[in-house]
Length: 347
Image (cartoon, rainbow, N blue to C red; front, side, top):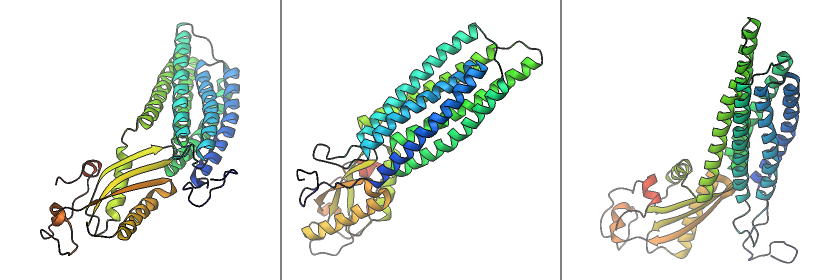
C-alpha cells in the first residue's frame, strides 16, 4: 500500500468496502432514526398515564436508541476494508457492539425490576390509559416490523450487531403487547369496581425479568463469538456446501475451522488430493473449493486451504485410475460434522 492508502500490486489487501457491510450500516441508520421517533411516543405515553409498566417500555426504547447509536458506529467500522493494521478487517467491532448492547439491555431489565418492586409495594393510580395505550400499540407494531427486517438482513449479511438490534426491537414489541394486554385487563377490572393498581407494577416486574433474560442471551452470544465457540449451524451450512460441490479428486476434507469476525467468515481446512497432481492442478482444485464457499457465503468468506497428499490407505476412497493404486475403489468418504472438524480418516 502506498502513502496515500491505495492498494498497489502485491500488497495483498483489497481496499474495496464490503457491500454487505455498507448495506448493514445504512439499515442501522434507519433503526436509529425510527427508534428516536418511537421513543418520543412512548415517553409521551408514560407522562400522560404515569404507568410504571409503560415506563418499562419507554426505558427499553431508551436502550434501543443508545444501543442503536453504538451499533451504528460499529457497523461504520465493520464496513471499512482490511488494512495493514487490521488484515482480518474491522468486523470485530460488531461483536463488541452486540456485547455492549446486551449489557445495556440487562441493566435496563434490572432497573425495571427494582422500580416494579417499589410500585407493587406502593401502588399508584394510572391516568388516561386510552391515549397512552394507543401510542404504545402503534409504536409496538412499528418496532416489530423493523425488528424482523433487521434480523433477516443481519442473518443474510452475517451481521451480529444488526441481528442483535433486530432481536432487541422484537423483544421490545413483545413487551409492548404484554403491557397493553395487562393494562387493558387492569382498566376493565377498575371499571368493574375492583381496586387493582398493583397490576401495573406486576406487569412491569414480569417484563423486566424478560428483558433481563434477553440481555443475558445477547451477552452469551457475543462471548461465544469472542471465544471462538463452534457454531454448529454455520458448520452445518459449510458441510452442506462442500457435499453439494464435491469433486472427484477431493478424497477427504478435515481439520475444518470456522472463525466468524463480524460478518466475515475465516475458514481453514485440510484437503486430501492425489499425491501426484501438479501444483497447478492443486491450485485449480483449491479455486473450485473457494468458489463453492463464495457461492454460499458471498464475499464475506475468506478461505485458506492446506493440501495433503493421499496415502495407500486412501485408495479405497479414490476413483481416479493411476499406476500407484494400492487397492480398488470401494466408496467415497462420507463427510460429517464430526469428520470434517476432526483429523480425518485414520491412516
